[in-house]
Each structure stands twice: as structure tokens, then as C-alpha cells.
Image (cartoon, rainbow, N blue to C red; front, side, top):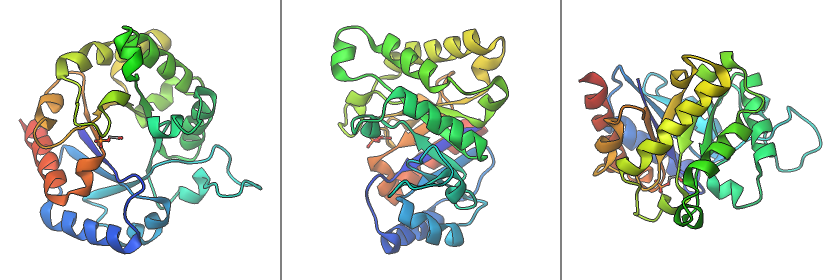
Length: 252
Ligand code: PGA
């Protein structure tokens, strides 16, 4: 099963997002073997939840708060998202850059699971960390911290996205050869933390300047189950192309 996730970031109002969904609907067929998740802005989730063909598209949020309710101005809780979204992107590097730390991210991951939402835990190294040869250590530290409150049973509800910060929105995508050792380290670490078999219990995605030209090279990798697509997910033709590639890889 391949998982293709669109991260629309802070783009598109409800009208525009509805238009994009219509175009995607016209260009994507629901095929076995591929799950397509669209992650619009919070305000777009409510209208889209009523419009999307659920056989083709799942919806996801780009963030969530870690408590269910209370005096937290401006926050959205997992229980509020339930019924509108089934996935949540947690710990994206753009949120880490705004101040989210590993502890907060671990609480958000746990909160999602508690509410039956599937967290997509994002982890990734910066250019400086990569230049110092610290990529694997940084990613594994973020992974271990993010999984702090996750039980072995919950792993199958989880996706982990390896997103090198230096590859996001830059066009400078990580080569499969660079992704491979990190992907291996991620699976190995989970196996160490949770025991035999757990290393393949979750979905592992790559993200960072992925598009129709390089999608196949990741999707054909042994340890990679899908993609977290930013910029190219706003282009319906390119995104539909990525989904088609995933279908051929999943089918063949
Ligand atoms: P990008 O973004 O595909 O535009 O690099 C990926 C992401 O931030 O999830």
C-alpha cells in the first residue's frame, strides 16, 4: 500500500480548495493499493469533508493541539477534528521552526492516537546538521522523542515522514541513496524500541521537493511507503501524475 499525502500549507481559501479538489477528482481514479490524503488549511476541512469522494480522498489536518478542550485561544483539538479529518501532520519542520519542540510534538502524536486520528510524524535534519554529518543522529533523536508515548499496538496507525529541511521547497531533493541510510536507521530504531517486526509496522514517507520527475525513484525504494508532497500538490496535473506513478508501483 502506498500513501501519497498532499500538504497544501498556508495556501487556498475554502473556495479555492474546493476547486482544486474538483480538478483532482477529475484527474484521479480511485485505485486499490494507493491512499491519497489531502491536508488543507483548518478552515477548508469542514466544507471539503462534505465534498470529497471518500473512496478517493482522505482528509488530514496540518497541525493539532494536544488537549481535547479548554481555554486555548486559537487552537484546534483532536476531538474537534474527528469526523472531518483522519490524518494529522505533526511536527512539520515549518512548525518546529516556529517553536514546537520534541516534547510538545510527542504530546500531539499521543493526542491524535487517543482520538483515533492517524499522526504523520515529521522528522528531518537541517543543512548545517547534514554538513556536520549529524543527519542520522538528529533524525533518530526526533523519532525517539516523538514516539515517547506511543505503544507498540499504535504503531500501525502511524506514519513517519523523513523530510530533510534542506530539501523542503528548495528543488534540492534528497537522492534515494541519501534517503536509504536514514530510512534504514528509522526502521532499525523502531525495531529496537518496540521489538521484532515493529520496524515494518508503520508507513515511512519521504518529503522534500518531491514531484512527478522523482516520485518513482522513492516509491520503488524498499523501505519507502509513500510521499509527503508540498509545492507540487497544489498543481493538480502534477499531483495526479504522482498518484498515477504510485498506482503503477503499487500494482506492479
Ligand atoms: P515540498 O514540501 O514538497 O514543497 O518540498 C514538502 C513538505 O514540506 O511537506
